[in-house]
Length: 328
Ligand code: SAM
Ligand code: SF4
Image (cartoon, rainbow, N blue to C red; front, side, top):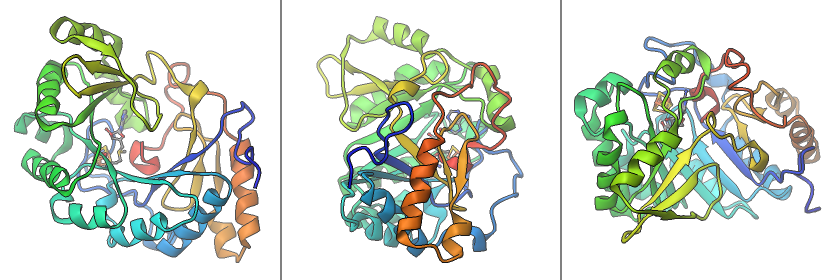
């Protein structure tokens, strides 16, 4: 195995894959999936757990070390702990994490941790039940129950992802900082991205996170911070605490030069950039009986397609798929 097997044409080493295990979700976040949306992938087109294991084993042989399970809402895919266990056992895989809306986490937190998941990211845009309902269509209480169950089960770190929206939840950033201080969570603010019609509509509420950072600096003493695990967030640390706050700024300050990831959607398509259409369809090859070596070749081929950077600013109309399809 060569160290450079998964290096893209721009010299970026791909060691992280985000696996979308379903495009379905029990919420309808305003910036992500439209209310009433039903045009989902058919179950026969979902990669099975064994197919996912086979593909991820090939990624791992080529140097992938970290896998995140995402969606849609990954916990609506039945038996997710079984898949987590299969992937945790793959040689070379060092880290399995989960992105979830946490509505179903209370009942499965312990099982997921036992299956090998250690790190968890939870979407939480508001601590006010009525605002949470307005943004997601769901109940805040369930998410808070899920979060407390994750804390009790020993997940660490637990990261809260908050998409900051003007006129919706922008006034809650300080409250969210206090909430995360109280519970020992990490907090990440995210800028809205123009993914699908929902994302483009939400851009009307866009907030430049550089301004949020400046605002927080007036209330809290912010020191330079780093979090292990890399990723696109730029961190600060609140003085006198363990709280790290990350800013994910694809629009105001893009981070494409250090991008280390690709995405696998539930229908077995490798998407090489969130903000571009460059992709490779693996499922037809898998179901035509290809060999493990063929899968590795297909992955290398996909990595060669990875574009240099997204074009959210120049071509916001470009991406028609919703974030729920590729998993954020
Ligand atoms: N359902 C899980 C969740 O909500 O965490 C995992 C999938 S969700 C698509 C992953 C992340 O994408 C979430 O943190 C969500 O806030 C973010 N997201 C979805 N649409 C977005 C958009 N248009 N702009 C920015 N972030 C978005
Ligand atoms: Fe569902 Fe996550 Fe999209 Fe919200 S952001 S609709 S929870 S997939």
